[in-house]
Amino acid sequence: MEILIIMGPPYSGKGTQCEVLKNKLGYKHISTGDRCRLEKNQKTEIGLIMSQYEENGDLVPDQIMKDLFSKILDENIQNKGIILDGYPRTIPQVNDLLELVDSKKLSISKVLNIEVPFKELLKRASKRAETSDRKDDKDSEIHLKRIRVFEELTLPAINYTKALVSVTNFNGMGQIEDITQEILNNLQQS
Image 1 (cartoon, one colour):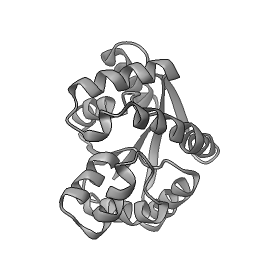
Image 2 (image 1 turned 60 degrees about the vertical axis):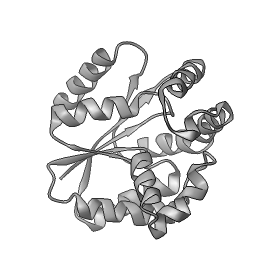
Image 3 (image 1 turned 120 degrees about the horizontal axis):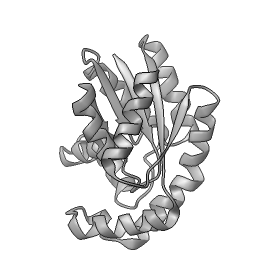
Image 4 (image 1 turned 45 degrees about the horizontal axis):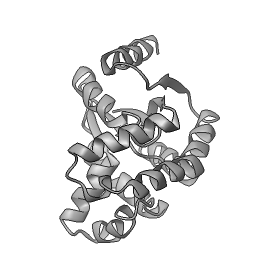
């Protein structure tokens, strides 16, 4: 099973790119946010814990995410590949994921990082709030908090990841199709 990781700030288009790439590559898209919401809606033990964090725009503790991703990897071991969207988000999560991947005798094929300027992220957050049914998307304070959490925790994790595995940066500005094509061209060169 191939493992492709998409990183970047909230509202950078990670989920959009993952949805397009899953169809083009034949991989399964694993959205951390969607999976957390599923666990929460099903009121699983892990979901109840996650809901406390997710609704406030906070990151779920690393050990809980490690347990969830171990389960996700086991569930998808027969797939051609998976695209991880929203994990890892902290330096400890990078280490946890690498440990999980190694223990299951898998490897990370590529890490892609989508970059978008702060002001554009805020515009996209406002636009998403107009069409989303999610309560957390309606609150502009949560938008700011998500971006600040990214800057404080996830950006250092991306830089840390660069020292361990190959990470390719992509400009997240422009047409969705153009960004997708740039990503596909990069994946074909690997």
